[in-house]
Length: 97
Image (cartoon, rainbow, N blue to C red; front, side, top):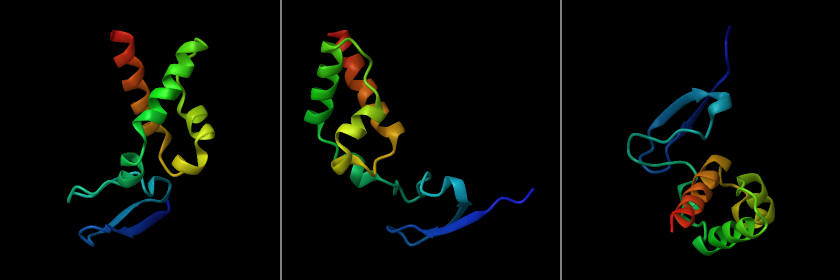
């Protein structure tokens, strides 16, 4: 069974990478570049904290899909698993205090 591949160039070191097409944009480079790194760094900790506090108030677990729906303009390009990781960190941090 043949699967489609895609090729891209690392914007930092210009190394060429070939990946499965459905994994395009999921992997970084050995030089240290990570896709969406600037978008992830742009996540405002205050937005994350406010959303986690809101979830606590209504007694639900924070969800990346709901967060990105509320803040679509700002964080539409950030992968959900990264948002969920940050939400989980904030949720457990506050839970332990």
